Image (cartoon, rainbow, N blue to C red; front, top):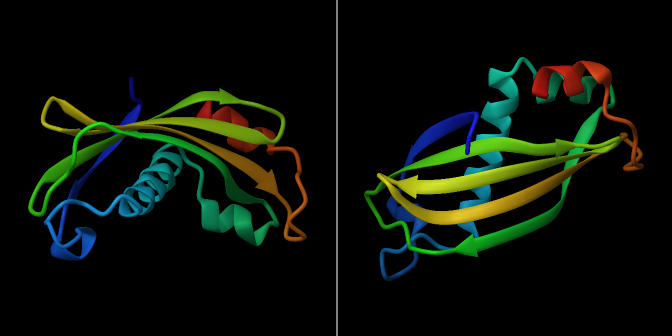
Length: 129
């Protein structure tokens, strides 16, 4: 499914009292995966932010299938489902070896510094397409 993946180790601070990754911590790892996906494709989010081009997560649809546990090494696969006028739809899959732990769809909205929707610059669309 994916164009890119990152590998992460699950540390104690990622988990709950039972040694299972706390559900909200998946979102942090997914954010890192999107950042690295963009960087790999030549899109530096901090550089675009300096130009007033920001992205905000506006939708997350996540399915937790199996838990990640303390000490696991996971891979977070990231691809793009579609790019619209002012939104980017990402698909993610988190795996431990061949097992799918999580599937997720995340939508980013391109916004200005005034937090208003704006068109995604063509340079970003071309780099991520």
